[in-house]
Amino acid sequence: MSQLTIYPDDAPDQGRVVNDVIVIQRELDAIGVRFERWHAHAPVSVCATQDEVLAAYRPQIDRLIAERGYRTVDVVSLHATHPDREALRRKFLAEHTHSDDEVRFFVAGSGLFVLHVDSHVYAVVCEKDDLISVPAGVRHWFDMGSAPTFTCIRLFNDPAGWVAEFTGDAIAGKFPMLA
Image (cartoon, rainbow, N blue to C red; front, side, top):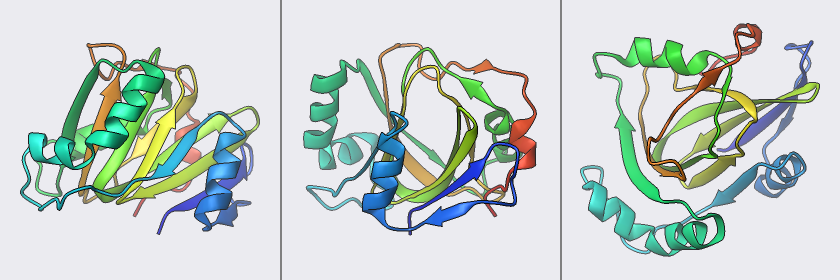
């Protein structure tokens, strides 16, 4: 189940938990973050190719491209047996920003996006069928968990893809991580 926990940025033990998708959307919209639920227009098997995954969500992808001008779309998967999973987890756990939106749609699995906006931290557990779009310049980090399992569609304006600007702030280490 998708979940949002909102914390004061100086009180990682005082989170308010939200499980209602409509309320999650409203809370995130208030800080400029898009959160939607998508459903496939065709069945998607666990061994689907990138082209099959993209075809299953083509109407939603095309809508975002038309709205935001994204130029690159791909599919990324990571599983608990990946040899670099621990190094990748550490890399994404550091607070950073991007000059591009960070758009992820969870085709399968889950992950934790944590946003640091003004004096609050918004921890969003995204699961299958969740789309999150973190606007350019928003401080955030991502936790895939110790045994990551996810497949995501990614959309970018910058053909270079995922390029992070790390803030150097140690805040990410103060807040709960994905199990």
